[in-house]
Image (cartoon, rainbow, N blue to C red; front, side, top):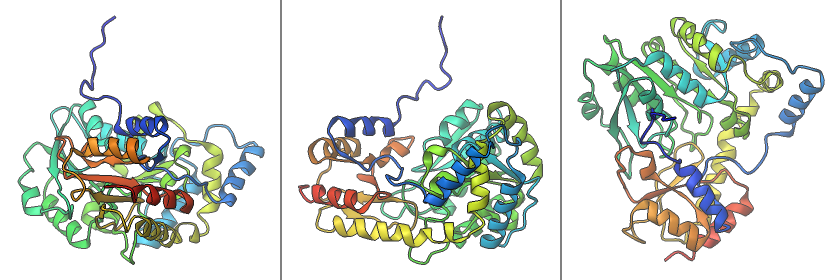
Length: 381
C-alpha cells in the first residue's frame, strides 16, 4: 500500500534528535523546553483529590464551566478584558492542540498565513496540512525585532492571517505596545485574522509586563489567543491549555474540537479551578524564573558564549561567534558530544535554515543542573 505524505518535507524534530544525542553522550539536556522539577504539591494533591472522589469521566466538551469562569476572572484581572466565558473560552489538550485546531478553522486552500521566524515548529506544518501557504517574515540576531514597514510588504490579497508569539520562543524577546499598535494599523480595514501564541505570558523579566493581544480591542475582535497550563505550572506532560476567541470563531472551533479531542482531562480541570483561585500561583512566576535566568547567566559568565537579551520564556540564546564559524547544528552537536551540554540550533526554527550562529538553552532546571552545565561550558574553547 502506497501512502502519499501530506508533509513530505517533515522529518524527526530537532528536539527528538538532540534529546537522543544527549542520552547517548550522557549530556545535560538543556535542549528541550521542559522543567526538571514538579508542580507545586498543592496542585498535585488537588488532582489526586478529585481522582479519588471519582471525577474521572468526560468533562463538558468546551471545558468545565467553573474553570472557564476562573480563566475569565484571570484575564479580567491581568488585562482588563471581560470575556463571555460560555462563548469565548474553550479548554484544550495543550496549546499545540489549540493552535492546530484553530488553524483548521481559519485556513482554507490557497490562503496565505504570515509567520514570524524563528518560530515554534508547529505553525508551518498545520498551515500546510489545511491547504494554506506559510509566508515567512525573518527576524535576525541579535535583536530579533520586527520592521513593520518591511512586514507590510508581505501582505497580499491572499493574506488570511498573521501568527504572533509573545513572549517569543525561541528568542526570549517580547512584543512591545508599539508593535501591537503597528500590527493593529496593518490589519485595520482588512479581513485578516491574528493568532497570538501567549503560552509564556507569566514568564516575563525585569519588570516588563506581557502585553496581550486581548487588551487591544481591534485585535481581540479579529484575534485568537492560545495559552498553556503546562508551561505555567511546570507540568508540560499534562497537556492542558485553553483558547480564547470571538463567539463566531469559537462556534467553528468547537465543531472541530469535539471530533479530534472532545473533552480534556477531568480531574486536572477541577484541580486547576481550585488552584487558580489564588493569583499568587501565577503572579509569583516572573520572580521565580528571573532568578533562574540570572543564576544561569552567572554560571556561564566566564565562558566564550555571548548571551542575547532574554525578556521572557525560559530560554536563553547564546551567540558562539567568538568560538566558531561552523553551522549552528554542527556546533550544537559538538557541544553535546564533546562538552556534555545539549542545546538547540536556532536555525531549526527557520524554514529557510537561516543561521545566525546562535543556540538556545533551557534554564527551567534546578540550580544543581544549571551549575553543572555552567561548569562544563567553561571548558569551551
